[in-house]
Length: 166
Image 1 (cartoon, rainbow, N blue to C red):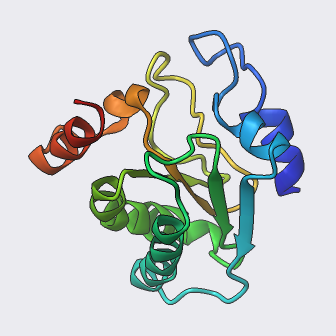
Image 2 (image 1 turned 120 degrees about the vertical axis):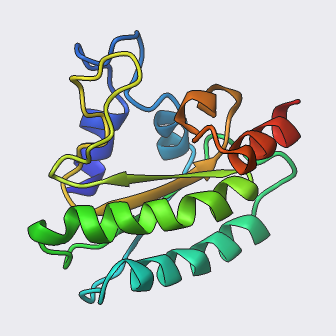
């Protein structure tokens, strides 16, 4: 299910995206290069803090295993299939909001996907929801220069981007 979604959604263009190219321009090379990793947290998490705890472990692992600037074609998808529909926003999006500052400080982006879809609109088309996914998922990848529009305009966010890209 997730592999099909990656191939059929993330790796392909979408007419509502508002720009040419794949929904996620880095996923195809990660998938084809064997650098798209996946994990499943099979238990029902107690809430966003437990999801955040799980993802902080992956943060430590991801940072310890990245090369210098970080390969932009390397990614990790962690599925949380036992998060109920009524909890997608509070648990998955809530965990992503809690985690984003620490991931960004480490030069990583963390995004949330779920069938809801997540509230975050597309950058070029606010009517498009690119973060629609088949299951509740948190995705991690190295930050790239073009991520600036996805960052909060908080000083910590801009400082992390500037430290990485000048």
